[in-house]
Length: 326
Ligand SMILES: Nc1ncnc2c1ncn2[C@@H]1O[C@H](COP(=O)(O)OP(=O)(O)OP(=O)(O)O)[C@@H](O)[C@H]1O
Ligand SMILES: N[C@@H](CCO)C(=O)O
Image (cartoon, rainbow, N blue to C red; front, side):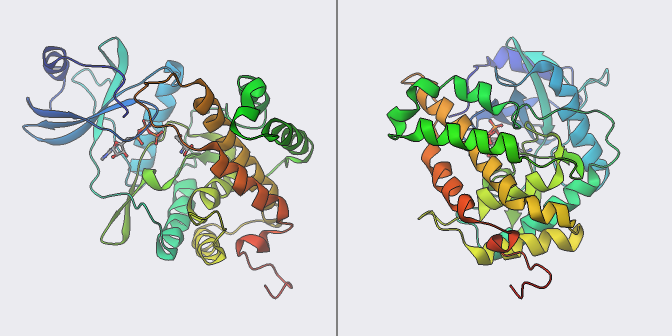
């Protein structure tokens, strides 16, 4: 459960006096999520989400995340909006942690995404990429190719505890990606973690996007590679090309891909799979027993990586390539 920091009723009521959102009526810790402590607040004026940023979020990045949510919301993306206190500050401090209050979004995430969900996520991702244009703050992707070797170093000597031979496979993949990572693709602000639990639907229609705390500047099509990984595989590990096709056509209906982006898709999908394999592997090995957080299976992403190694062109994901008849 993602409530790492306890907040007393007194501290919380005091904190809320800085805002114009009415007095506290209820406060409930939210079990989902792994990164930060989240609480659902009820006040006299409505519902809000209170987030206390935990150790993996760098405080210096918060102006990027909070500014980005404002920028996107101003451009029609339904995402949480930071609530400002009477001094105009979106970032406060509570129980010793940096803290913000953001608007509550209605909707539910889907545990078993269907083709229609994948198509809508593709469309929403293209809208998000366009809405991010003109955002003035930059943030490099700390979990991009340069970040993978140091991240892996933290679990390298224990990787084979998870699966015999996994360490060697990761090293081979790191070397391949270092040599084959594309250059000069269109860049912009990416979400970088648009998994099903970060997308809300209401009556089958995509209603909102949350959790911008991995957002950064990177290749736009890398975000699409992350979404293909997160949405288009079945629980048995098989890639569902119908879902892939729906996602890619949803995306390209809003933002066509360049030839270079299409060519790069299989390698970017490999990189995206490795990125989540590595963060999950680290957490799997390093989270102390008894910690409240639910660890996610690194091998799910190892299986996905193996699929991507068999993909030679973007048609493996359902993209129609000119002249391929695919
Ligand atoms: N603005 C919001 N409106 C409604 N619910 C929200 C909002 N923000 C967060 N939540 C709820 O809190 C849960 C956890 O939020 P979030 O995904 O941001 O946490 P996290 O710790 O960063 O998790 P992770 O990085 O693992 O996805 C969400 O699944 C959702 O149920
Ligand atoms: N979406 C990530 C966890 C949070 O960033 C994963 O499934 O590994």
